[in-house]
Amino acid sequence: MDFKRTHYIGQLDSSMEGKNVVVGGWVEDIRELGKLTFLTLRDVTGVAQIVLVGEDSLKQTKGLTRQSVIKVTGTIKKSKARDFAYEIKSNKIDILTIAIHPLPIDPIGRLESNIDNRLNARALDLRNQKTAAIFKLRHHVLASIRKTLTEKSFLEVNTPKLIGSASEGGANLFSLKYFEKQAYLAQSPQLYKEQLTIGLERVFEIASYYRAEKSHTVRHLTEFTSVDIEAAFMDYSDVMDVLESVVVDVFEYTAKNCPAEQKSLDIEIKKPFIPFERITYKKATEELGRDGIKLEVGDDLQDAHLRKLGERHPGFYFLTDWPMKLKPFYIHEKDDDPTLSRSFDLQYGYLELSSGGMRLHDPAKLKSRLIEQGLNPVQFEDHLKAFDWGMPPHSGWGLGLDRLMSVLTNIDNVREVVLYPRDPERLFP
RNA sequence: AGGGGUAUAGCUCAACGGUAGAGCGCUGGCUUGUCACGCCAGUGGUUGCCGGUUCGAAUCCGGUUGCCCCUGCCA
View 1 (cartoon, rainbow, N blue to C red):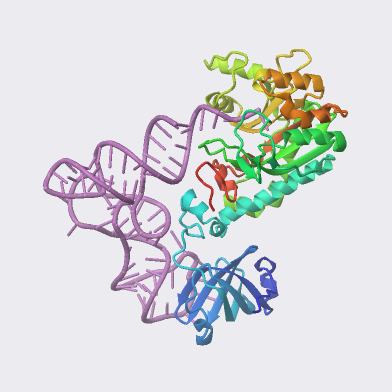
View 2: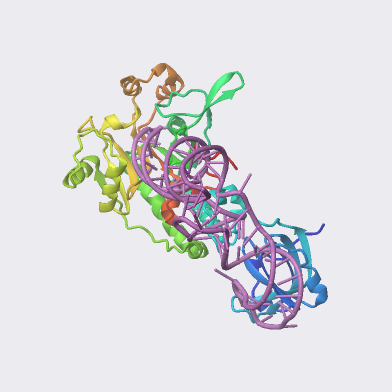
């Protein structure tokens, strides 16, 4: 079976009139006009019109269904079509695979199926150009992040997702059988990336993490992708600068490199205004106080509070200097007020995109913080060991990639920007 | 875990107590410039499931399941 193509559709244009080509892809539409048939054929690069004239040619589309895979051999011609500058006149159509009818969703997107039906047929959903655009954009976002961090001397690393101890903190981990032992799925690379600053100074990792929380919201998944960095000799304000660069670069890079995707999604990506506003937790609670929301120092900001803040600060902004009691054991306190921490969240309106800060590097302090938070230092022995081997002062953050995608594409539900999302109900496909 | 909404043809939806419909798709016919082709004819249903009220239930009520949204949970 020969299925070699000479060209991607995107490589063809009207200046190639008279050229013989072989293209292949998926039948998007079939329009039969008696002795003339038009097909629209799509591959990953674009869509072309195929014209069949004459009885021998027309016979070849007998039984052909939409979304079937075909190989087309033909000649480039100028086209009278409104939507195509050229067309491929063919008398040889090879049907490589017939698609069933009916399909579970309309793959062209003329009728938008609900998210559940689309996720059940996700691979087919990618034939919808709007959906495809999201994941093409996602590729470019990842490329941009890697470029920015690499330029800033961060090394990409891979840490284990299968871990032996659930001792990282209080959140719910998925547990699984690991031969005769108990294992867990990592919910963050936090401890590993801190340890790596000893040898590599600046590291980043882009990976999936797992949280066993039965959250039913448009911004939570049980499996999500996080971009994490950790850097020796950086303070929390330094890594905020890094985060700001990463985010701004993503917007600039995709604004420039993804015009077609923006058109498909009907969005215009614009570089956000910099620098991002940095608002302290204290100032945020005062602002909320003026809106009639009374908060004690140490109260966490609930969704309703963040929504209120988001109204006042609709774009990107940092919330900094959180009370120590709201932060995990490894967060470093402030010099001038040990009840506050060198920490921050990156917000987009009400939505938390990232959380980070300076970490403790003094083993004695770290140990006492563990105890303070009711954790058992014995369970952190492997981690604590590294702090005796010359732990540099260091800071870092974790950025929710799926949430960033949701902001970039202006799509509320993270399920839309994740290929095969996992939530408490959905484990398939 | 709590609250709100929703479930009707393959898909998207209407009908809201009185014979279950439309558009798209699909099948057949006609059609040489379509591009959401057009015209004619056809195809398509246990109205999610179980029970109740009623002369009569897609419609009202109770339960159940799936889904959507909000809250909670969420170093």
